[in-house]
Image 1 (spheres, rainbow, N blue to C red):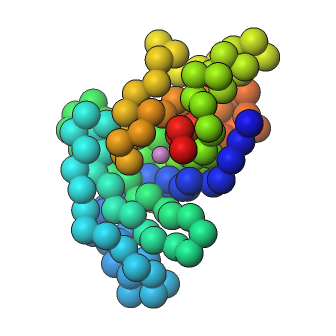
Image 2: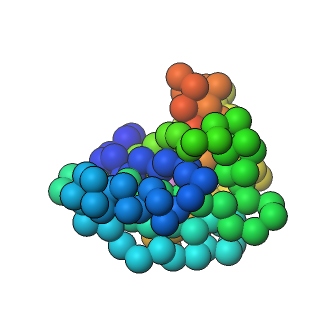
Image 3: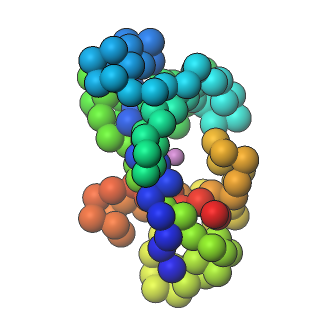
Length: 134
Ligand code: CO
């Protein structure tokens, strides 16, 4: 069912500082920041050869990463995103297996314009998992 690693997302309290760390200290190629109000984050993509890292900063008062940053004030790894061929088939298989899908169980449009779902971290070794249709 699982395909490629699409991205790893890191929540950061200061996007400009984190971007500069990746650009200047690590020598990575980074994009300009992009505000995604419907997701409550501003994102910078760190472009790697085989995948990407997304640096996420809260946007707006109800950001879904605000609670995570309250617990991890200097930032931290927030989720991993795997690609699947068919997100509805993946969801149904996971539901049958007893895994918890976050939200109402219907895919939303993710940061790359493709359908995504999030899976409960307690069902996946303590890691928040995003599935994105490839
Ligand atoms: Co993501």
